[in-house]
Length: 460
Image (cartoon, rainbow, N blue to C red; front, top):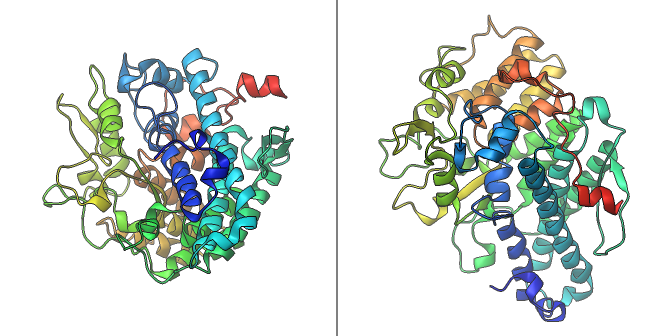
């Protein structure tokens, strides 16, 4: 398919297929490298690469040549956002997110006046997904470039761009940008409610309706609303949408270790639990660069891994502990959650989760805990623990809000390794990063805020 910006606009949006091609192009751009090499956006920088280094999910990112991009990860290890390599990658992230937003806005500019082009319920699906994606991209820009919401909700953060124009969009505050995300997500959810929400599709006759989990679907809008509301401390709304997803029963927690090395087919990412995941044909290369590279792959030491998974509650039976790490060709134990085994069925190939149902259980647990309902909070956690081969938390040890909060944080550390969400969990609660991550380096005061790119500051 030609790149969207190489197709004349009148041709692209002259029929339904053109609109489909445009939004597929946006989904593809969530993976495509945004600079030379194999660095991808949601499949690397925003997940198992840069953002996981920032959360200290790997303890060797200061090693020479680490992860095939030593200069980038060395700078990230020390949170040196003014380093020339890291600064350039931060600018790439900004540009990639806002390029996607521009392409979405161009589609939205055209779609209402051409509603008659669409068959069945495709108008609702295309517009709903587009609005949901616009919210996702803005929210991730906010999580990188805005102040932590607990301390900087009223500070200027990012432009929330809703029109396809070259005119300058003023910066919104953290609170304003989050509210605009919710506005887009509410409309997206309303539109997508008109589509088929009864099933989660794999391959069906219409390619555009296939693989529901690789679209920002109806349930993903609810999950993203839960995430945004929790980010802003609105726990009643966060709890409502998290439970809407859980109670839909469309994304059941696994009941056996589908990632086990003993399986002929290893479902390493627990795919049935994905509300929304990005498809990447480049995941083999990304994994090789990060985890099989010489001389030093990104890794978590065996001692640190044991401390994380097996020590806090004697949880050596954790399926994540036994199945998400293995020895690479250079005899180094590395994270292997996104390794691409041979003979995988198509639906298990190249998928990077963006929103998981397990996060909905953690959100519901945090909301219950804030309301003082410790048994309910613990119950949500135990649901996920059971789905990871673990026993229930000891009620005698999890008996006050602080102990529940600590248990939730431990689950984020274990569940979201190599996915990037842990850094944003720390930021949302304005955690002392050195204390909770264990990093030995001095943490700068602005560790949770990426600087605006120079070009953006100059433009303003």
